[in-house]
Image 1 (tube, rainbow, N blue to C red):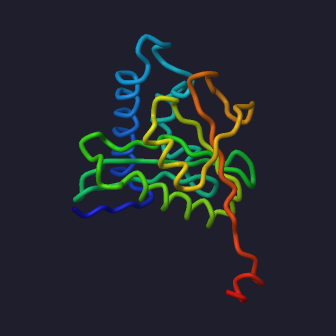
Image 2: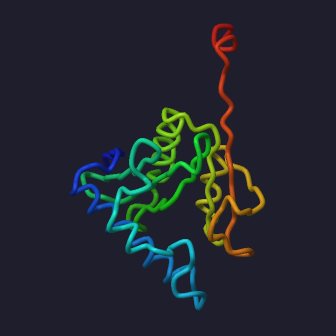
Length: 178
């Protein structure tokens, strides 16, 4: 099975990303909301976001990736710059029928490479407390739990887990010595 991960740039890519983000919303409402607010704050203004894609996820301060499995769109993930040095990951989703191929990990690796190339030195995200596989993926990548704060808009105490990573980079001196 061939996995391809690239920036969503064409109108067709953006339509595929819209469909995946909408599928993510539907999946989350079915599997996570369970009687909670019918539209949690993490999905506030979703229609506006979808209509304006790539919006805040576009260059130069953002990135929207689309994953394809054997040519079919199966996953997406994005980041946007919170400020000049900090980015926040949003909309990580892999269709359930594509689970088990490592697509989430591959998307995260590409996204973190894009974030580093854009000059970000602090990476943040929030995830639902019930998404144990996602939390494990993020922790394997180097993310650590942090307290929620105003830096994480829309966080629901007791529901969301906030995470952060500050990548360790070699200095030029360390690189020469290696």
